[in-house]
Structure formats: structure tokens, C-alpha cells
Image 1 (spheres, rainbow, N blue to C red):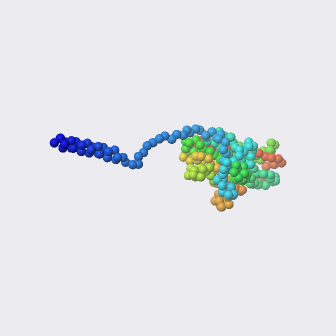
Image 2 (image 1 turned 135 degrees about the vertical axis):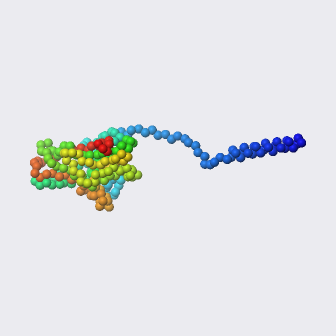
Image 3 (image 1 turned 90 degrees about the vertical axis):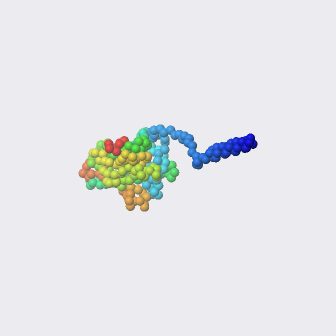
Length: 264
């Protein structure tokens, strides 16, 4: 009887041990665990030293790093760095150059030369006239860009009153190719810059316009000229015929205004 009882106890113990072992092996796979990944974000103040020029060239490039343009508001190679150190900024501008022209008693229009930024890879290369906006605020608030002639063309003694600059064939190009869905709305019509009210250049509604955007006027890339227009014909100066004109170099100040809201 004792042998039977001992055998029974042994069997029960083995059975319990087997059940516990089986229960321990009933883990459902895959198993998961978590660990932290950390990054620190800080405000972009525009001082990282990298300046990226636009695409729109003869080969359809998307742009690239350029050397810092010196020359102040007159620019270098027609490109101006406004030197704005803020998360929302005008990062590059074009200094419009209409060359040397003959005085005329008729109202005449003259085409602007193309800027020639110096690319780190590729050297000096012509581009459409453009303005570049960077929005790295990270708040998805949108922005608005306008422009006007703040100071009329003058050579110190004579002012070309009534002169206007006309921009046509406007389009936008993101610095990042995957940012196309966030494009600002560009004024693609004929934009006349005079000394009166500012003209709308581009507007980024809330949720749009993040990152860096080039607003270009025409393109040099032949296959795209049919839809985007020819850059060589997209910026012109019109000077009235019936005003005083003296010999010399005339300079105007084009004022670009970037607002931190699309409704201002």
C-alpha cells in the first residue's frame, strides 16, 4: 500500500511539473520591447553657412550649394544674400540687371539678364531670375510674399518716373524633391512692380510652404519652356517715353516683403 501511495505521489508531482513547464513555454511570438531614441531640436537662425541656389537651368537641375554671394544689395552674379537670421526668411534674391540701353523718346521695354550663381559643384551657371523663401519655424502657419519698387530708378540727378518692372511665368521649386505637396501658391500672371501698392508674389496658406522654396520666373530647360515660359523673356523693365532721361547708371530699390501669416 505504501508503494502504491509513493508511486501515486511521484506521478502527481511529475504531472504538476510538466504542466508548469508547458505553461512557461506558451509565450506568443513575436515579443516586443521598447527603448528611447532622442533628438534635440533648436530654432534655425540661418547661420549654418550652406546656401543653395535654384534649378531651372539648361539641364533641368534641381539646384545645389553655391558660394556665398558678396556685393550687398547689388549682389554677385546677380544673386543677393539678404543676411536674414530667422527661421522664416528671405534667403536669396535676384538683383535685376537690365544692361546698357539706348535712350528713347518712345515707351520701351527691356529684358533682364539672367543671374549666374557660382555652384560649388559645376561652377558658374545661368539660372532664371528668382527669389528664395525659407520657412523652418515648424509651426505650419504659412506666409505671404509681396514686392514693389520702393525707390524709383535714379542716377542721382534724374529719376525715371513711371518706370515699372514686370514679372511673368512664375513657378515654385522646392529644395527637397519630396516637398512638392506643400507648395505655396505662386502668382503666375503678369506681376507689375511699381512705386504704388505692393504686388502679390506668392502665398503659403496654413499647412503649406514649409522648407525652402525658389520662386522662379521662367526656365532655361528647353523641354519645360512650353509650360513654364522662357526665363530670358520673363522679367522686363518698361520706361515711359515722355520723361526726362540723362546719361548714366540708374538704380532702383525693389522691396520684397515677407509676412509671417498668409493673411497679412
